[in-house]
Length: 260
Length: 254
Image (tube, rainbow over all chains, first blue to last red; front, side):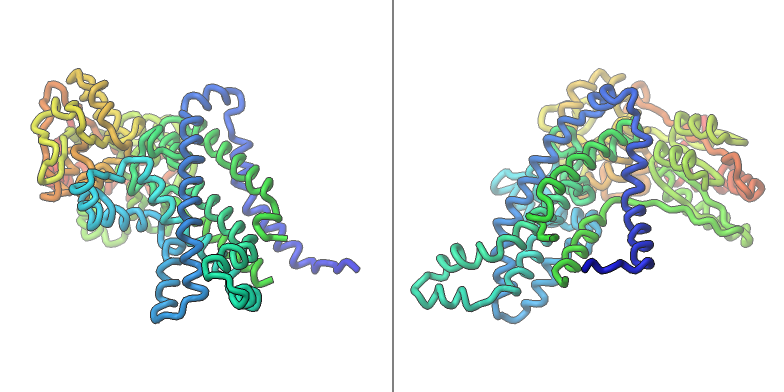
C-alpha cells in the first residue's frame, strides 16, 4: 500500500535538494586537497573549532536553562502582554544577527546601558571575551528551544498534570516529574536546533565580541577572516564545519530532532 | 504534520545569517567597486558625476579591496575598480586585466581613540602600554597590514600585538569599535577620521614610521561600457574629484 508520489512533487523536491546540496558539493570540489594538511594548520582550524564547540555548547546550556522556563510561562501563563512577550522572544530569529550584535553592544558593551554599570561597579567587560561570544550566540539561538518547547507544552494533555497535582504533587514536582518528561522530545529537538544555530552564529558575535583567535574567533569568524588571506584555507575551514554539523545532526538523527 | 512544518520553518530561519553584496547590471548603469575607505568621498563624487552625466547612473559596491578583487575575478561585474592597495589591483590586473590604471590618492594612518580617551593614548608608543585594548583590521586587509608595518617600524609590533582584542574586517569596523567606546585605540586611515568627525579623537603617527597607502583606480577589462567608465575615472582624477578627496582626508597621489 505504498502511495506513488506525484511526478511534479518529485521534480520540485529534487530541485530543492539540489539547491541545498550544490554549495556543499562545490566546497568539496574546490577544496585544496593537495595541501590539506598545510591549509589546516595555517588557518588555526583546531583553535577555532575548539572555541566553536565550547561557545555553542555553553550557549545551548544557557538557552535550555532559561528558555524552557520561558516556554512554560508562555504556554501556561495567563497575563496581559503574553503575545507581545512571545513576539519579543522570537525577534532574534527575524532580526539580522548584526542588528542583534549592535543591540547587545549598546546594552552590554563597556559603555552600554547596563554594561557601563557592569564595567564600572564590577569590573566585568563582556566585549572581546569568550563570555561575550557566548552572550551573542545565546541571544541569537535561544528562541529556537523556546518555540519548540512551547509548542510541545501546548500539545500536552493537561489531565496528567492535574492528576499528579490532585495526588498531592507540588507544582515543582509536577513540572519536574510529569511535564518535563512528556515534553522531552520537543525540548531535545529544540536544543539540537539551538546548538546548530549557535555553531553557525556569525553576525552578532563579530559585532559584539569582536574577532580574536583563541578568544572570540569561532569557526564562522575564522572562515570570514581566512577569505582575505587564504581562500583555499577558508574552504577547508568551511568543510570542517560542514562535516562536524552533518555528523552531529545525523548521529542525533530523527530520534532527537522529532522528525520521524 | 503541523509539527513537521513548524520545525522546517525553524530550520529555514536558523540558516539565515551572514553577509551579502550585490552589483546590479542595468544597461546604462556603471558599477564601481571601491575600497570601503572611499565610501564618503566616492558617494559625493558619484552625485557630482551623475549631475554632469544624466545618461549614466553609478552604482557603488564598497568593501575590503581584497574581497572586491576576488569578487571581480569570480563575478566580473565591475566597470571600475578603485583599490586601497596596489596588491589587490595587481590581482585584478593579472585576471581579468585592467586599462588606464593610475594612482589617484594617498591615505596616511592615524590612531583613533574614543573622545574621552580612556587609556590615555598620546603617541604610537602608548599602544604598547599593558592593558590597552587595541583594535586593528585583520591581516590581509590593506589597512591591517599597513598598521602592522607601522608598528614594526616603530619597534612596537610584539608588545602591541599583545594588546589586540579584535581583528576587524575593514577600517569602518575598527572605527565602529572605537565610536561605541568598546576599545581604547585603533589604527585606521586619515580619511576615516574625516568621516567620523568628532565621534573619535585622533593621534598622529610620525611620518618616519607611518605608511602612506597609494590608491590605484582602473577600468576593468571586459567592461561593456568603457567610455562611461573612463569618464568616471576622469571625474575622480579631475579637479572636482581631487577636491572632494582632499576634503575627505586623502592626500594627493604620490
